Each structure stands twice: as C-alpha cells, then as structure tokens.
Image (cartoon, rainbow, N blue to C red; front, side):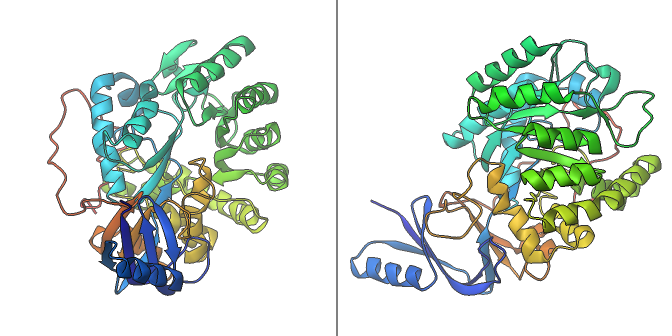
Length: 444
C-alpha cells in the first residue's frame, strides 16, 4: 500500500532560484507526487477513496530541498592534521565512527553529500550501508583513494613514493594510472578523484603546485569516462584549473587563483566548480578562538579575496557553482557548518540568497550523479525535503540554526530530530592537535 504525506501551509523554495511561494507538497513513498494546487487536489482525492494521507503542518515554515554538501570527508572524523589523519586512524573504528557522523550530517538538514575520497575506500561501504538502510545518513556519492603522484597532495613528505596512505594512492606511471582507475571502478566508485595540485617544501608560487601533467590528467579522464565514471579534480592554482578543464574533468574542487586563461577554459566547457571556501572562512573568522596559526589565517584571507571575483565571473557566464564545506576537519565538524558555503557565496561572491540556495540544492545533484532526481521540489524528484522556521531566501544563515529545523525527510522517510546524539568520549590515540580545538557551534 503506497504511503502518502501531504506537507501543507508552508512557503515553498523549490531550489531552482525562483522566489518562494505558498503551496503544498504531496509525497508518495520516496518521491514527490505533486506540488501546489495539484498536491491538494490529489490529496483530497485520496482522502475520498479512504486512502491514508499523513499530514505535516508547515504553517510558518519554509519547505525546500534538503541541502547537498558537494565536498565532504565523512571518514576523516574532524581531523586536525595530516599526521593525525595518516597515522592515528584505525580501519574498523573509522567505519563505525563514520556511520555515526553520517547521521549527524543528515540531522543538520543535509540530505545529500559527496565524499570524493575516503580512508581505506570506506566511502563505498558507507554509501552501500546507507542505501540498504543498515545505517542512517544522507544520500551519498563517493570516490575511493584520491590519485596522487609521488610529489604528494597537501601532505608533503608524509606521502610515500608508492603505495597508499590515508586517503591517497600514489601512482608512478601510465600503466599504474590505468590499472588503478579501472580497479576503483570495479570496486563501485561514483567518481574518480584526482589530486592535481600539492605542496612542496621550497615552491616559489602561491597556492599549490601542479603535480600532474596534462597528458596524465587526460589519461585519467579517458580511462574513467570510457566506463561512464566522471572525474573530480582538486586544483588550487591557475595552471591546474586550466589543464583539468581542457582535459575534460567533470567537477573541479577549489579552482582558486584562476587567471584569464583558466577562466576562459572553464567557461567554454561549463565545468562545474565547488569552491569549498567554508574551511578558509571558518579559520579566518574564528581561528583565533581555537588557537589557529595567524599566518595560516592570513593565507586563507588572501585566497578568498583573490578568488571571489573570478568565481563570480564564472557564475555569471553560466558555470555551475556547487556548495561544499570540507566537513570532516576540526575546523568544519559534522553537522555544524553545512550551511556556511551559502553564506560565503552571498557575502563574498555577491549572490542572492536564492541563487546560493540553488547552488546548495539543485546544482549539488551533479555531485551526486543524480541530476533531475534530487535537489528540487518538483513532481518526480526524490522526497528529500526539509522544513525550516523562517525565510532562508532573506537570510541563508538560518539554515545553520538547528532549533529552526523542524523536519527532515529523506526519500519520504522522517528523520528523528528530537533524540539527542549519544555523548561521545575521547578515543585513546585518536587525536593530535594542529589546527586547534574542534570548532563546534557551542564553542562560539
């Protein structure tokens, strides 16, 4: 027997950027059946047929798609340094903790997340466990190990010359590149993650240094795309963004410090970008409260200031912008900051709240590989819906106030927002300190 839910009395933000409007939403099982007057008419018909219709009174609420975090690290567990990430984690415990953290993310109104890379490739198993109902969490897309060269990613000398460490797999030649991409696809990834840039001890340019050649990036893309798997590239710097775009990468994380050449290529190909400025914004705005390095704060201040104008030009030219938060670090703990990228888009890129909401909902469907299926309040979409007290089309920061989050549906199923999360105690040997204390909302 189909299960029907009628959400009525609220104001609907549909995720497309259109203004909010009053109306109802009718859900049937895991999908949205109808919106607006059609929803009321179909619900009335079901009632006349004596079919059960559950009701959610959304009077005074904004009804909108659940947020989609397009850059999340669900297996990192609020790590404070690469040392902690690489040498203080254990596979079994990582899996159990990640399952708990996935629920925190969901209870913050995030109904979809993209985990581009994960410790021991555990994103694959967590995604499958969520889909099977074994654990509770957002709809999820995932990669496996991020592809590194021996120069490394952002961990410098901690990265070995071959093999795996943490979330990375070091590749040394074209044969290893093709073999690893195919292996990850066989394991069931949704994306291949490529760490195009990294840091070296004595580099002479700002941002990060490109550590993959164009031909190597192109080989990754051709190998993955031949098996219908997209490629996401971590790029900080103009050359890396240019090469990732022209090589055919489907999504670029960061894309900071773009120059005119890189911007032109991104615009020409309409490559989606997830700037992921929440990490920098949190360190910049609140780093002094958690003991962060002032030099690091200044670096991130300049990164936002130097990149915001290019992002806006890309957006105005039709480049899809996605909201990602880098949740999983001590500066971006789970369940706390998933709204913040929308705030940064409004404050630093000059987007309207409705434009930012589209970036955090409908555009995020790209990261989940579910375009046309999630991120929008429309008939036929999955019923991933939240109800929030207040009007995010005027102030997106209310999306970060959990006291205003009144209901969350994921696939038409109600999420328990009342029962407190279990009190977590310290785990022996699990933490070290570099960025400072965990930047919880309670701390502020």
